Length: 229
Length: 247
Image 1 (cartoon, rainbow over the protein chains, first blue to last red):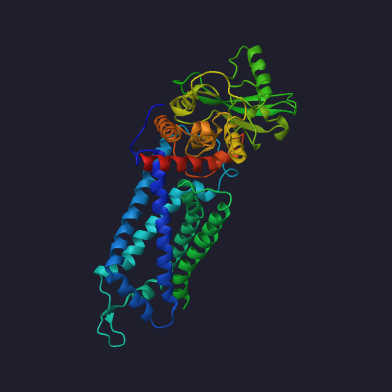
Image 2: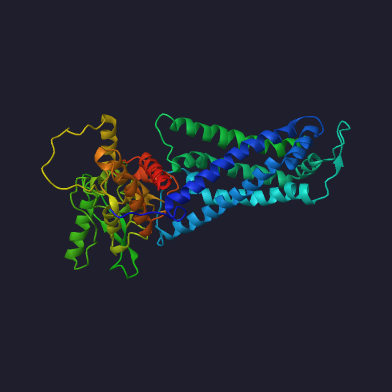
């Protein structure tokens, strides 16, 4: 038997590892992001949320993780594009009639489209809040005379979520995220070889109820809450 | 019963194919899908036309020769069935049935519904075997194999290499086939010495052949006539990772 070595990223399975690891990391990010932003629901005029954003932009470890996070998003996108291109090439002549409804889920067949919607959302989302926070004119205020100048991102959020088109964009994008994660979460485990009859139901359950329902629903609730407030 | 067919006709690999419509009268519902094609072909021969070329051999669902993408599904609408075991009672009288060859870069059409599946042979040649010196057959059960592993290995070995997994996959990926061949040996003691070399060699060859990548849709498992589980793909992914880490 010939010995074959090297080229992890060039091998089909190697690329799947990167897709799975980056995807599962981003799932973890969503949990943290959600947990922090739940403070938007606190009825304190944005004090807790603004103090939290100050912490998130001033802690060096968080800064490092956030840049790693941007890199991992890029890796996930680029790897996804490369895989899709490769997969398209594997079937140059398409079928005349295709019926895949009985053999696979809709979300599993449309990960690229769902991912693209999420990417477009991310660009707009980053422009509205990340860019404003770092380069925009966000008013500052002080709490409890502690001498710290807090940027009032809460007001920026409040204003953004007052626009109907913006709220709709968020809700639609969270639907895309839900379907993306419905397949993506469990798919990541399968790609890494984690498949066992004892734990498959658990992985699928967490993927469905926590990542495809609870997390997107709570994220979507934020703009709706501010819009209807 | 009467069946209207829309069949892909292509003279050879180089030529551009097209669909042709046929009507087969007096189809018995007890006929297999291939026997219905036999009736069509006899009629075409009588009329002096070129019969439709299609692959078939054992006609009892164990050889993996028959293919055909029927009404948008590999081996037709029934689960766990090859085309030769698909009977006409599953179709309606007067129904129009679309029949296409397997579509994949790695499976070029040779003629009509016949595709070249030798890419699978080359994957097997790259590592789907164990290197042993020939000699007397050893006594049965002289090598202990846990019952559970024997069962799993046998399930994987049920793969008949028909290529339905590739045909059904939206990415024309061969991972179910390759993982079944990797697994059947990885689960047995005889497969251990070459286990991690094997998985790398076979995956490498699979990539060279131009198959697509797995996106875990599970369509292969659903359309496989031998119902091979995608847990084999997970095993291959695991073994490949171990091989790369140990490298």
